[in-house]
Structure formats: C-alpha cells, structure tokens
Amino acid sequence: MEITAQTRFELSDDLAAKAATGVLGIWRVGPSAPSVAFTASHPTAPDALLWRIDLPADPRQAAGRLEAGHARLRTASDRLADATARLDAALDRSGPGVAFTAETPLAGTSTDSELDGWQRLVSCCRPSALVETRIQDQPVARSLLGLGGNLRTVCRTGLGPRHAGLHRDGVRLVVDSRAAVLRVIACVTRGAVAISVRLALPGGAVLALPVAWRFVQRVLAEVDRGRTGSP
Image (cartoon, rainbow, N blue to C red; front, side):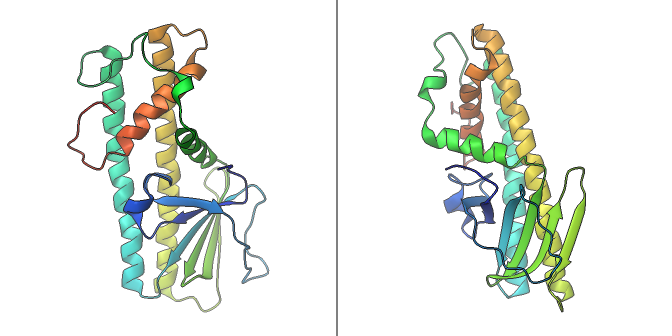
C-alpha cells in the first residue's frame, strides 16, 4: 500500500486481529476519509499523517480501548528489547536462534507484505501528525503535533472534561507510538549495518536492511513472549 499524506492510521478496535497488518499491532492503515471541520481554525498541515481514534460514547469503554492500546505498546517495547538482544546474539553467534553467515538469504527473499510493513513504519516518522479523536464517528477534538514537540489543539464547543481527557490520552498514545517506531527503525538500521560488516556485503547496509527488518518484525509479531526459537 502506498503511504501518502492522505493515509490515515486508525486505532484498531480489534488489536489482536490487526497486529499483522498494522503498525505496532495497534494502528490499522487505510486511505483517508474527508475531514469535517468543526471550527474555523481547526489545525491542519498538508504533509501531516492523520491518526484517528474512534471511541465509543461510554467513557469507561473508551478508556478501556485506549488502555488496551497502551498495553500493547508496552508489550511491543518489551519485544523490541528482546529483538535487539537476539539480534546481537545472532551476530555474535553466541546465542540460540539465527546466526548470520554467507548463506543468509538477502534482499531477493523479501515479500511484499514485509516491504509494506517497513514502508508503514518509515511513514510514521514524518515531522507532523494530526491526532483526531471521534466519539461514535463524530470528531470532538484534534491536535497537531509539530516538529520539536509543538502541540496545537482545538475541541468541539461544549466538550466535557471526560472526553477532553480521552483525547489527551489518545495524543499520548500517538506520541508514544511514534517514539516506539523510531526505536524499531534504529534497531533495524543498526542491525543492517552490523550484518553488512559481518558478511562483507558489496551493497553494504542497504542490501542487509531487509534481512534485519525481517528478523526484528518476526520477533515483534510473536504472541508468546516465552518463545525463543528462530524467527
């Protein structure tokens, strides 16, 4: 799927089912729907990706959906630490699982789904992000996150403190998700450089990038944290 400025990331209401095709197992990806302005000064940016959070009307159910997203993000962070350790072990040939050798399959074995997953991750790093909270598919608040942490928020007139708090929590989930994505990318690129040095690849880290991404992706996708086999 091509990721453009019109692409939207939506908080999935079925986190387990969307884990394989979304971002961090939290956000599903789809084409953008038309944005409905509820104020003349609603924040926007031409290059900002839309992160949409559609919540039920019941505040407790809405809070539960957000907490499920935070919990899955914490799990993804734990798995990333595991992926980093296992990648180091594989490179050192001193731990269980994969050891990178001259026979390690390289870029030609990457699948379209793997490449799409990498593209989704990289697209999350755009400088601007527009976070939109909806209650039963009706927009109630928007925040524009800019480069350097700048934040501009507008809310629908009459928005109560509970729903305002839900939007604030949703913005935090997006900020934490973007930070986690940067850690994943750093892990993959670091691994790609190390693999290219280990195998003395003529194409360098570019050729090794799909190998490192496949390794990290499969560790992140593991449901059972106790599983330690080769990805």
